[in-house]
Image 1 (cartoon, rainbow, N blue to C red):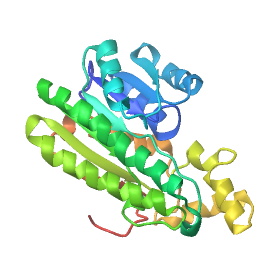
Image 2 (cartoon, rainbow, N blue to C red; image 1 turned 90 degrees about the horizontal axis):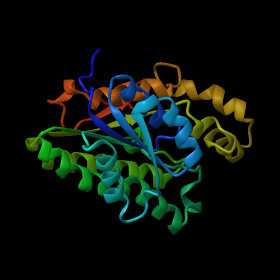
Image 3 (cartoon, helix red, strand yellow; image 1 turned 180 degrees about the vertical axis):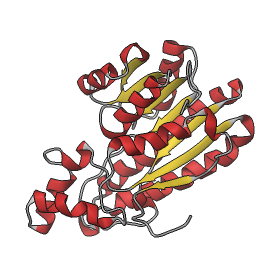
Image 4 (cartoon, helix red, strand yellow; image 1 turned 90 degrees about the vertical axis):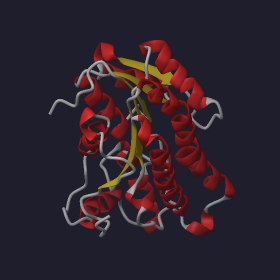
Amino acid sequence: MDLGIEGRACVVTGASRGIGRATARLLAADGASVLLVGRSEQSLAEAADDCGERGATLTIDLRDPDAGDRVVAECLRRFGRIDALVNNAGVIHVAPIDELTDADWQEQWEIHVMAPMRLMRAAAPRMAEAGWGRIVNVASSSGKRPSQRNAAYSVTKAAELSLSRTFADAWAAKGVAINAVAPGLTATGMWLEPGGLADQEAARQGIDRDEVIAGLGGRSPRGTVATDEEIAAVVAFLCSERTANVVGAAWSVDGGSVPTIV
């Protein structure tokens, strides 16, 4: 399907790997220019290669108070416009609630709530001036059904869903469609890389990481773990011309693991 975004300019945060990298690749393949944003310059450069001449990079820590303004300014400098924003950057560590420190809670809050808020606050007015915009906030199924793996992650992802809806209501009448997606377990580096969630979960349970990975698919009715491309396809669709009437939604992309019809 033609997404109708040829010539558009998009920002994708957390773009150096996983869902963000796959999303950037899909948007570029459909003709959009993409600013890939993240903290690792080398990883971003590798991801930008997937986008060919349509990709550009910005290395930045989104926890910085001025990061939102700087990202939007860089997109305007590079491409002369900003049409879509994908807030995908995130972090999670396996830890029971009684081991989470104030710093753990604050880190999750800064990355999952304050960073996307600042980016939307900077980008939405520019999109409204042009009369067209799309913003997609990549939350989590944990925001709909809290997980004990990391309570701070679940709570801040729930807050991100609320944040997304609040901004959606504020900007819909000005042509800016804002939505969220709530992925479930996804086979990204966050889970599978050395030291990732599979290793953390294995250490917590005292089992082998292969046992953890083998059991992941059983957590959803579909019986499999999603690929980053499957999540990215939904994100890219929500960035498209086809979704003008989708506003304030929080699409579950979790293989049915959260038993709700909302």
